[in-house]
Length: 288
Image (cartoon, rainbow, N blue to C red):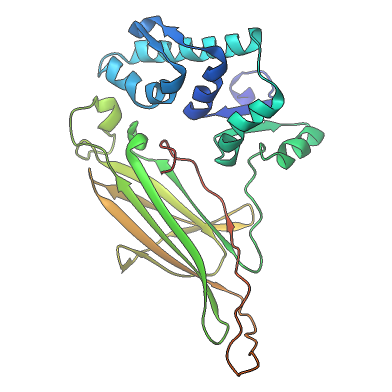
């Protein structure tokens, strides 16, 4: 921002539509004159993620941008000029959104950074566990559209140990594009890559230890580009999904082996449960 002529930045607040919705519990409904509608606290996320595009259609982008400005300005104004609940209630309302990484705060003051880190607001990528590894996956829209609201994601992660103590971190990730092929503005389900409407193109990055042993896409070996990120290794590629299509990745990472002690009868004692480091990128749909 400063490099483009803006003032120096000493702090940044990240809020997604669900945070705006939570804050509107304190502001009450907001009139949005651009669409002659009133956004209620309970449907603010729905308005931001979907309804604004339906109201604007293919030709109403300037009105849509102005409508978002009206909503955002009024929410901030009412928060600054109104009264807020006591901190315990604020923590109860906003804490889950912090846990989901939907509400984050950064400052250039190191003492303030320490406080923000301790309460989970700083949003730094956690350290990769040296023993049990870790896993995460992120997606970036590479379609030039607003199709993200239709993306679902399922992730399972476990550490498997064989009788000889050899350990493997196994992750399975399924992406599903639930977008329709028609019926919505092109701004939402169109794209800039020449694919049919409703198609989604994602830049997918998997994060884990530097010991990736195998990665498959729908049961077939697939190639990824490795990159280092904050003590992790990332493995990335483009993924294209047609309307209604799903794709499943299977990844295996080698971990350091462990000694497998025997019990009194000569059998194998149960090992402590491995706890890999897991962090998640929030999607447009909560729980997705």
